[in-house]
Image (cartoon, rainbow, N blue to C red; front, top):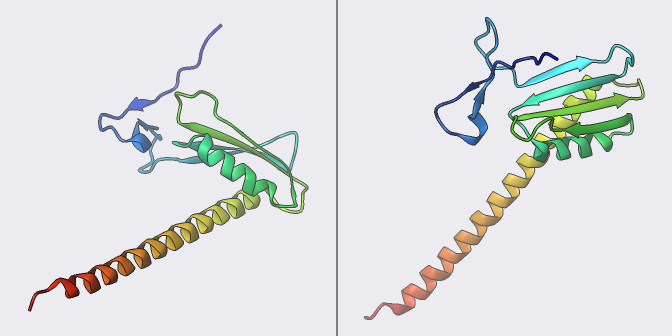
Length: 144
């Protein structure tokens, strides 16, 4: 039984998102997503996300399943020590798996942006209110 070796180089600078570098032959950039279409089922594809784990996988799957044209969406992490996520998508044929995935990723980006913006605005407003209260109380403390 022969095992296929993976060409993964370990990065010397420790950063959780950059622990592994996936070398790409003759390219100046790193491939972070791969899509493999199914040969048997025309409306099915497997997406491989590198440097991701089940945290994002669960969100992507849930967003895909909100789409009424998705008949199946599932994810798995092949091995806990490999930073790779696999997401399988099957549609009813009215849209392609690629378009469904792009739509789900755009929805996720919009959801995160709105969440970050609203949290930032709330924290900013709270800090400004605290500063106003602090300034009012300090003005009364001044001896004349």
